[in-house]
Length: 169
Image (cartoon, rainbow, N blue to C red; front, top):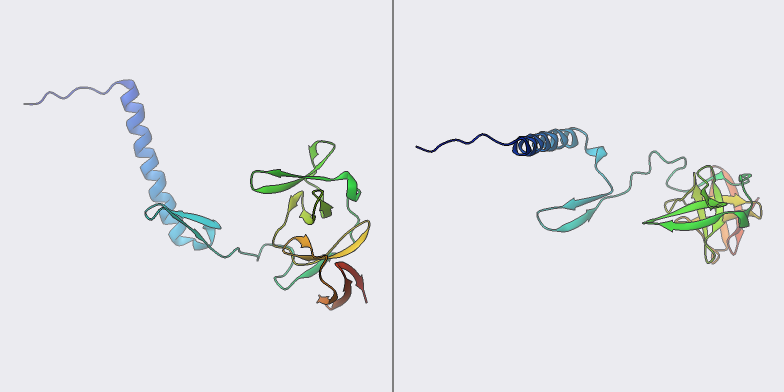
């Protein structure tokens, strides 16, 4: 007959943590099955060791998928050259005087390209017209498109775009 040993305090803590983790995983699976919209943009597939990319949900953005002029003619909180765009992990973040400029929305540069920044972070999904104190600009996938010339219509406003610079008709 085998003798059953008592678990040490450390063993009890580890066992409890394992049970809690298992319960948390079950609750998470149930929640995600009931709320599929809560899944993240990138969901790792643990079994096949691959990554699956899903479409980004644009419904909560302050503009529509076709484009917007919501940010045209804005008065940014800082001048164009005062904002420094830095890379932090996989994000580009606006800084002013070495502090995050979370209230900045407008067009700024990282020294090479011009980007649309909303609430202090580069918004790679924005397509439309946005401005800074130098004027309004045609934005495609979050960057000023200096190669585009033509017309752009958004929200019943038509802009004439010349090498990225937008002028409302």
